[in-house]
Amino acid sequence: MAVLAPTTRMTLKIDKHLRKGFTVFGLSGRIEARQIADLEELLGPKEGFRNIILDLKETRLVLVDRDTVQFLIKCEAKMA
Picture 1 (cartoon, one colour):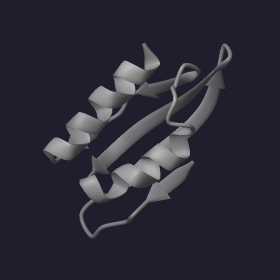
Picture 2 (cartoon, one colour):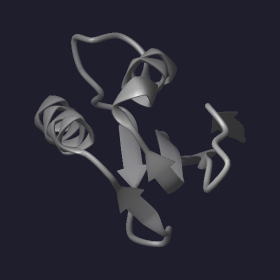
Picture 3 (cartoon, helix red, strand yellow):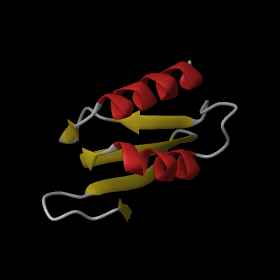
Picture 4 (cartoon, one colour):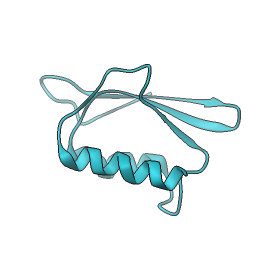
């Protein structure tokens, strides 16, 4: 588990576990543009995230800015 850039209101909590050969990151909390670089480093090489799952279904993720949405769109494209 990792917590990135704590704020006074809410932090980003990341739970990491393995599921059938995939690394699953469960994201919960608040993601802001300043945390995207930290997430990219955590997820690994930029050439693709083929063995990574970002689990947003069972968490309470609050998207707070356009940069975060664009980051998640890029992640989805790399995982395809």
